[in-house]
Image (cartoon, rainbow, N blue to C red):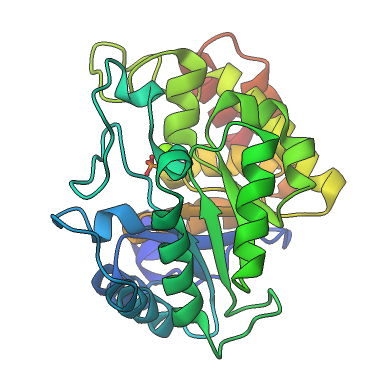
Length: 317
Ligand code: PEP
Ligand code: MG
C-alpha cells in the first residue's frame, strides 16, 4: 500500500490540511536536471555547480558554463531554480581552484571563501548564470534564476555576495551551513531574498564531527536536537523577515524528519529526486499541527535517537 502510494504521488507538497511545502530537486548538471524534471517537483532547490565541473583541469569558459546552466533552466522552464555558486574545497576540491595546502580543509578555503583570493572566478560564474537566465522571468517569480553562496559565515559576506548577484540581475540567497550564519540569520536575511539550510555541513560544524567519519556517525545526524534548534531559529528568522527558508541537505530526504522540518517552519525541502515521492506521501498523511507537535517533541529530546523516536510517536499518535 505504501509502495503504491509513493509510486503514484504527483504533488504538490502539502500536509493533509493543505499547508504547502515546496518539494524541490537536488541536481548536479544539465543531464541530471533533465532526468529530475519529470519527477513531481516544483523546481530545483540546489544545483551543485561544482559537481558539473569536477572532472575539469581548467576553469570552464563563461560560454561553456552558460550552456550547462541553460540546460538546467530549460529543463525546468517556468519552475523555480536555485543555482549554487561553486562549493569547491574540502570534500570537493576542484583542480582549477587553488586551495593551497591546508591542515583542515573542512575549516579552510572552501565555498564563498575562494572568492577572497579569486574574485574573478565568482564574477565569471555569475556572468554565465546571468547569460543563461537572460530573457527569462527576472522578477523573482517562478522561472527566475535564484543564486546562492555556500559556506557563508558572516553578514558582510552575505551583503557583498548579494550586491554582486543583484548587479548581475539575479535573485540572491545564501546557504546556512555554518553555525555563525544560523545564529545571525535575522541579520543575514536583511541582506538576501532567501536562505537554504545545508544540514549536512551545519550538522558537521555544530557537532564538530567530520561528515565523512563513520566512527562519529552518531554525531553526524541531523536529528541531533542542537541541529534542530538552530533550524528552528533560522525558520523563525525567516518568518519575521517574510522570506523563504529551505532545507537542501540529506535531512530533507528523511520522511519523518521532513515532517519535523515542516513543523519547525521550513518552507521548502530539496532532496535527491528519488526521495521526493516518499516525502510527499509522509507529509500528506499528517496535519500541520501534528508536524508542529513532532517538532516540539524532537526539540525537547536529549539525543538524536530520542528525537527520532519522539517525533515518530507524535506523527503516528
Ligand atoms: C549541505 O551541506 O547540507 C549541502 C546541501 O551542501 P553539500 O552537501 O553539497 O555540502
Ligand atoms: Mg554544504
